[in-house]
Image (cartoon, rainbow, N blue to C red; front, side, top):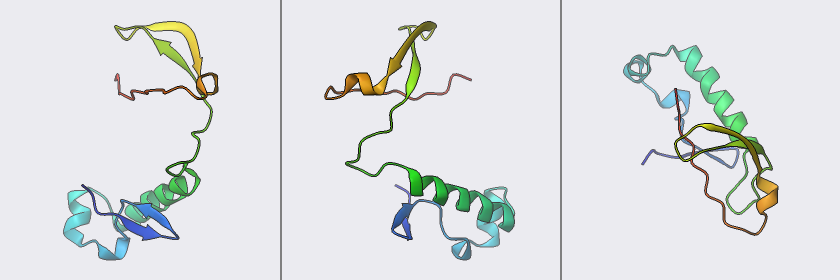
Length: 93
């Protein structure tokens, strides 16, 4: 499990830049400046992400068939309010 760092009350899994060695950055194939940019973007995303216990943001997405093909049928999260919903996120590239 990754180490968690607190920043402005947010739990972030990206280590602060100051804690990384040159070897760490080389292993990530990043420069110091690139890592700072990536981490800052991650912190900003986390700032706006729902916290545990909060409602998920509403969204609409296309349903896939059991074999992963597009169906043109749309699903909107708010239509399932009060019902359990399982989402499977997977890359198909």
